[in-house]
Image 1: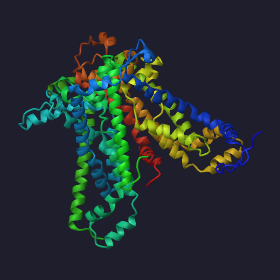
Image 2: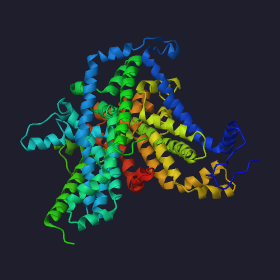
Image 3: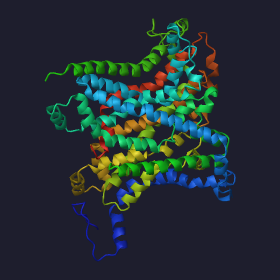
Image 4: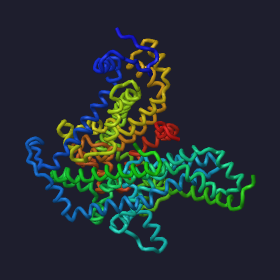
Length: 320
Length: 293
């Protein structure tokens, strides 16, 4: 019977046993830990890694009838087809524009909001506000789309009613291709700004109060305190958030676009994922759309790796 | 210490600006709520411009409760939010705990494996094909099993377990517990706060299931709430599916808007209900796993 030592963290030094024997002994000793971990590992293998292997379909002319093993190989034919398709530029443009607009208009807002919230002296008021702004994060995109339709409808939406009363012309928010991207960004702002403040506020409150006191003694006003103490303190957090965002620049949310898209805005609304859904799931072009998805995922991975590298070069901790 | 004029001015403006932010955040939710309780006639009369209903009216809700499709979808979503969350929590915590024990051989390799899945996703199609091969298409389980463990949550939970002092494990050991016993009888009760936070994240995710249902579910009777809701909102169709076409024969023509908004309220209600109880947990939950700051 194996006895276990009380101190679990020290490893027994096995000088005379072979490595294989040691490995087996550890497996037996930790058998219940492995039992706990096993279902999870199996989940990752089946639902994360097997699909990764399914990427080979992008290089085949996959037919569900024949399966992966028997389908014909076509090399990079799908990729060539995709890149020479004018659709590609439309998808790319839409994806990039939505992401960039979000980066420029949405990204700074949680930071600003965090700073403003931080300046509140009334803690009760602050807590109430925080409760309010966290809420939209939990609402599904279906609900947010529904609310958007309700408020912005050209015929019966309250926003247009107000415009009418003010003597202004009504505006077709929901079916106007020019404002579609802006609408998406606004929705994102409403939904995620509050939630985004959590991590920034945590970083702000982690700052040593003595730094502020020292600055006050030196005569710094509140703005200078913010500029010289608070902002540098949250620099790391912001950089990390920025990398993550850049790494996901190709990931414009399927749900949001899918729900808000309609005939009038289709040209500016189509992004990689909606394209894959339409042509892949609905039209059955599995191989072609897998190639499209693969392109998107590889670019995303490259971006995260590069961004992480850049951040580390700047002296900050990266994501991994 | 006396504040300067500029400082006090800023404070006042700040309070107003933030108050405005709060109002802008709340107004859409408030408006939806109001419309859902508005008398259909009043709604038509004012052409939607209702800020506070003259009479509170629940005809929209009564209508929804009478449609089998809506109730069915709510039941599906409720199932996902309970069974799904339970399973997800169990397997995420189990794996997280196992990985937090430094003596586990292969720990680092498994962690790398998980990390990679966060960085790289092969795409919709390969995932769809796997689900199809497993025969899960049109099964409610296609909305649970493929998303059982979130890599993010796993890493955070592992970090949380890292911080549990070794003495606890050792005392359990002395009492004769093996790792399983330690996990279930000691670690889990202690982690109630963390479990509540992660549970909330999972539950909200499951309740809001939409994308995967669009992909994997064609059978309307298995559709979760968000799908039915979406059909109502976007297709201007409040018949909530073919099964309830019969129910459309009603004397009172209820304007679709009030019904739609009642559906939105019902879809939001569980979240709003659970929200105050767990608010204190989830902000902590986000920070639970972070080692820095």
